[in-house]
Length: 222
Image 1 (cartoon, rainbow, N blue to C red):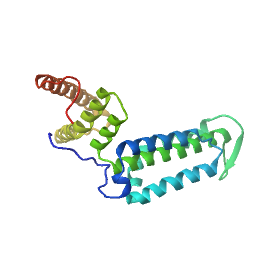
Image 2 (cartoon, rainbow, N blue to C red):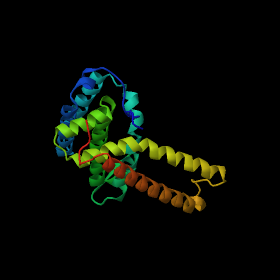
Image 3 (tube, rainbow, N blue to C red):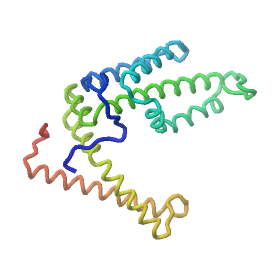
Image 4 (cartoon, rainbow, N blue to C red):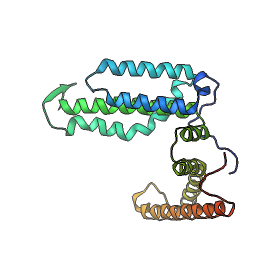
């Protein structure tokens, strides 16, 4: 674990976007997200301009669009919620494909979908063109508190460790005839997740003690 870790979201490349300074990319992402959030939902043409700008950056990064679209699955819960809004919201009704839906709910669903999709796609572009370690260095350049940066660094480093441990636990459960997908086996799954949380907490305590024994004073070496 002492070696550097890549990330599943990163796409190796040498484009101008890959070579840009990480703190510049973080600031650009923050500015873009704030601009999208501040754009009124009724300004439909403005969202087309936002999308065009984002597509230009993606084209310059040479990251395949399909590579990013596959990872948009993280947005599915928000999409489901947005699709329900026209049916559960109150207000004047309009017909869409022969179905009566709430007009304010339809507008709210549009705003949630377009703003969420643009924000997630921009974030995925940053993750695809910037190594996790470079993101952390960029946050340090932007004067983010050291403790927060260190927590994020350890989260990245141990994410694969914890997910691998969870995968082995699920394999052991299935080999004993326990299917985590079945509701009657959910109590066993909950106990396994609780045990994984305790192990992760204890691992964090051991790592912290090891750091203190090696002279940790609140800052990690570069």
